[in-house]
Length: 480
Ligand code: ADP
Image (tube, rainbow, N blue to C red):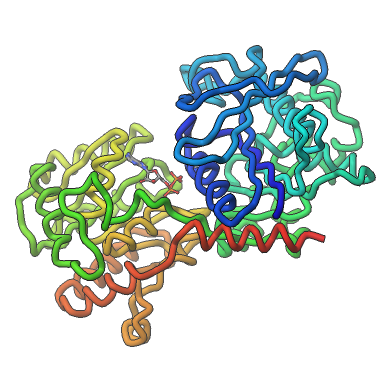
């Protein structure tokens, strides 16, 4: 049994800005299910939505700050969550990283440095908890100082091993004008082979340079970030650390299951695929699209940002809307994309339905009711929707990048024949290629038996957290 401290800056359902929050909920639970002793540590933001009892466990000093460690549990589980309470740093209402108008808090480096130091005190059994970590699993730049600072304690026989997971290389925790003394760091950590990055401080580098093992959220993304295009200047360091870098695909949560989903019109399984159509007509009805069981319904649920290839989709919409399809889009993001999509939806109300905003219930109905899910992403560390889609027999059309490449098998004569095909994949980042791939899907849709075979293949895939947790455990057990 390993004692694992999972260090994270967000945790569903307490606080969430992105996918990290979901991983921080699911992975510790899945590891605990394998018999590991897992504790999650998180800043005690004022905005936390706490539902369980909270107790004071200890009080200790980090520099000039008095820190309280509070204890609660994850809802629906016995996994312990430790909250680092320091009101000067985490007492603001709202988002963990930015203020109400979207500007990063000026003191983010100091805030997360304190959080990292508190996590180290806990991991090293210096916080009066009678618990010492074997493994400290850190996530993203907010926790990058943990491996960096622990590297100074390697002589200490109690020093735990460190794992650092990169959820998205695009966010690096880069800061200008910071000095070692501002973060109370020894100067040696700020050298170019440490946190220094072209005269700035890069907190993600603390994880990449010093952790025993580095992971990212898919094997292909682990390769992608070693390239100039997606390494953001850290590709050299990642290539240097290649032997310690692996990719492990995220799992998906049990609430994304068409057999038990209470948010959809009709539950269904791989053995009752014909029931899926009830969700299709319910979706069309809810979105005021013509009700037609036989038209191919394409869908997209996404942040509307360049990473997700929304501009690529926009470029192919004029031609796409001439095909016999309906298009359902749910998302929010950059205003320009929202406006452009709105214009198409207004011009083609009988073919395209756009919902701007965040709507979990509609997201479930779309996954259940659509035939195809579009993910033309420029890059995608892991991606969740392509996995949800497959569980719901909604065939994904994805770009050949990152986690999409690892979780979707393109429909080709050989993959159709050996029953491994689960969706459609394209390489080039342009509208023409996306359109051609949609036409391939349309063609297959004309052969219901083949279509249902691919749906069945997709629905039978194992995207469980159990599978991912087993891979993390294997990694923890093999750190020397
Ligand atoms: P990313 O984390 O890069 O945004 P992922 O595919 O990994 O992309 O995860 C996105 C998650 O957010 C999915 O669960 C997706 O369904 C959900 N999501 C994104 N936008 C919306 C929205 N507008 N309404 C409901 N759910 C959304």
